[in-house]
Length: 299
Image (cartoon, rainbow, N blue to C red; front, side):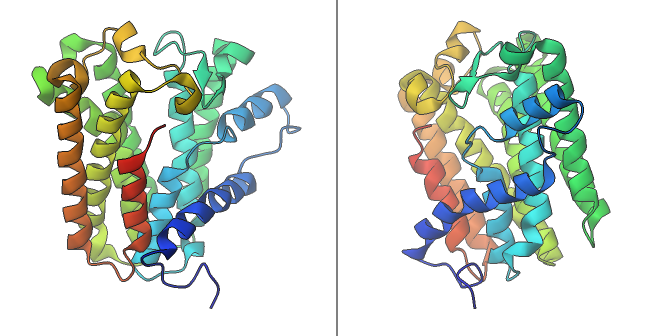
């Protein structure tokens, strides 16, 4: 039995999490075309966005649920790559001047800064299409997998969340509106990652609870992100801090204060722990390690 196949519990969880970034990068390398592919500028820009040193939490979540449900990590290769490609597309588009207007992403110049707005739009389009191509080629359950991802990143999920984020007049009032944006823009994809892991593991009965765990994890992640936008710096965050205030964006910190936002994050973390316990995974170590990374993150 290889290290990847062995059960991951207790002190081994940190080692599992440490190995997952290289594994995720290997899957992305496998499916992302080389920079020399014509048109070269497009593919160079795609690779700049994909291989910018992200935390790879979303591929890790797919792998954690897949292994936690008793399957081998190999079953998670395509969905893990697909969710990170979809996530990266969203970052490229979010950074555009018409959206969040950010010049820095993961410590490097954003795609539109280096290649212009038009190429950045095309890079996002290409990465989204590639995500569905990779996912659709699963040997089994490809159609179900595509539907899971499409729901998470479409108008009911990530894209709808971005629209609400851009125009405060469209949102629900108060904290409820902020959480609604978080649920769509961030947590929906986290939920899809967890559900995809259960799907490819053949654990269909676990899919709803896996999705709930992912959603609660995503809400916790975004609550922590709101706090870090106030307390972090560009060196540790890899992006420009203070953007929420600069854009006069409604946040948990703005509504509840820093301590209130931290309490909200703690509540979501506990909800994620409860959902993880309800899953009763064969090996909960990897999923628990991801949860702890969200709890302790500084970037």
